[in-house]
View 1 (cartoon, rainbow, N blue to C red):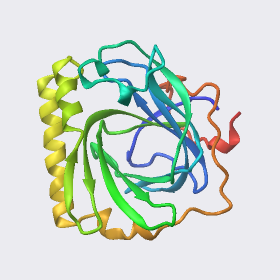
View 2 (cartoon, rainbow, N blue to C red; view 1 turned 180 degrees about the horizontal axis):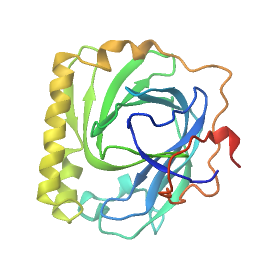
View 3 (tube, rainbow, N blue to C red; view 1 turned 135 degrees about the vertical axis):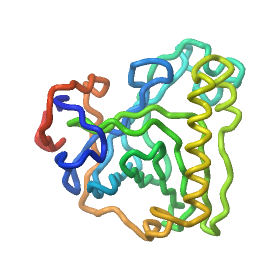
View 4 (cartoon, one colour; view 1 turned 90 degrees about the horizontal axis):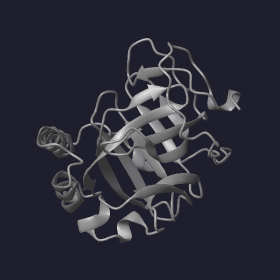
Length: 237
């Protein structure tokens, strides 16, 4: 795969990926410019209104890890964001995840199921609006999240991580307020049961013919700003 272009997700007139294309869903490290999370996904839908992708069980991914080998979430919160980090390969465990992203929204909505396809919950991942390039999309996680349940109840998640990120300087007060405002906007959407919650995505199922996307060796390559074109992950090597 090669990185040819950058596009803002949802820009009118930009080319779209086809159903079944393999792309990368990546996150930059906070207060840094390097990629530290990379997940190969399969495109479900790509329109001016919505990008939907499927993260299949067993997908080879990249995750952040402390340089001493400790899992990030096993490190005490007080030092979780200050100890040196590297990246590690991993497999996506458990059931797959359907990710939905509307153009310009400072969040994406993820759907989780139990192993028998009983719907579990939605998860609103607050993040930087996604930057679109030929091989996928890039964003930056904003720590704070919202879990939404089938009975339409909801709760904030990871507020402790959000507060700690501010204490150690990974998020300035102005940015933190923007994230909080985005969270309040997402709560408004949840309470009005707007899209995508009302659209029946919990009944969606992946195409059984789809293969699990591979993690390319150059998964961390920069998204070059060189113009507009359409590329399919299936046509690059």
